[in-house]
Image (cartoon, rainbow over all chains, first blue to last red; front, side, top):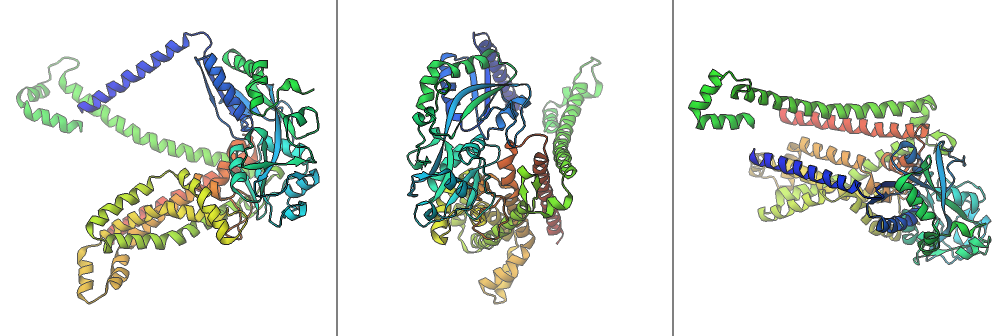
Length: 283
Length: 320
């Protein structure tokens, strides 16, 4: 029994010790804990901003995670997260999702979306009509769109993804996705999409430009390459705004963090490097 | 534990301790009262812990059921269990695809893993010399401890390209890939427990069999395996429970498409993988959400039934 008592006492001391450290934390200037959830398309941006913000404000704790966009405003409504990242303005109704009352949307970035294929697919350009045919399951072979004779593997994001909402709206002009087929699968996050496209021959999918690697090919749509310049000059249409949702107007550390992401320094610096586009660049 | 330590101390310092308990010093917190109070407190803590666990299980069941049953406000019982049309955007919630997928996947897994596992168990308990046995058993135990996401990742990066090459199919995701991954996962569980069951068959049985002139094959087939039957059944059901509830490894290789698997290589979905793919993306107060809860409740019911079967088999094993 002696060892048991000793362990209990040690644990108690540890708990008291840690909680007093925590109290000491609270005494500093800008402090707080920011929980961010939601869109995985915005995750690279959020992580980068969080790192820089934590360097400037060491007393602020930020934890960021991501799934589909709809997770963001839902987590904010439930009080699980302080900021919900989402790829559409969640204060308005969009197809499939109702608006979230009492939340404020903060525009943080322009997200270009790219149609991507596995390296082995010898196609570099598709028209909107091709894309509609492929993603609705009507075109099943790469030879029908100028490629070699191989079946097309379609990788789609699950319902709830903001990338999916944007892609359907802007790249497919609202055309419905297929829901079943021998060569059709759904993945949960942008990261899963990246793995699937990289490792599956003849696969086609879509993701925001920040996730595109040199192990895959980003396709031109209607002859326009998915680049920042083409988004800004209005030629490339498949892009959307990324939003941070908060419950009412933000305060304290959350307010400062959003201000930092919207600041010219971050927008023109790290955000650009990640292949997002500053909000100010769009007219 | 407390009682035994009290007894030990009472033994060593018998005279003073005994007298203090017998007489009671009359003070409000004398030794006797304190000991009895501690004794009672210890008992209450133990009872409270047990009640706490039961309460949690009960609350989970109630929550899953109450939320899940709301599904039937909007769709009929038959639609949920008998329709294969799962399309939440058009308010179609037929879960037959996933229920069928779960059972098909489990059956396929057992079909591959049970013969293999029993062969391993027989090898371990009958054929192998003692030193090798002691080396192999920890290896199997280690396999049980590998996190499922590791199996899933290996399936995604090694198994699926292999299936693609061998079968010539485009994707490789589907029941076959999931069943192979699950087979590797449940193999150690089934073979270790079957191994214990076979090893527990009394030595005299096999001795008698050999004395009658039976070969080793006959002894294993006609004596050892039938005698260890209930133990092996127990192992199979434990493996089955693991296969049914497994999520992470399955979701990485099954393809996650809501379509009935009429081929082993067609991307499909099972109860667990569908829940984990969709639960974070659904609006909270929607039929979609309730339908996912109902699927979770189904999984719970299936595993409770299995545990009940295991209990029943154990009791039967003891009596027989």
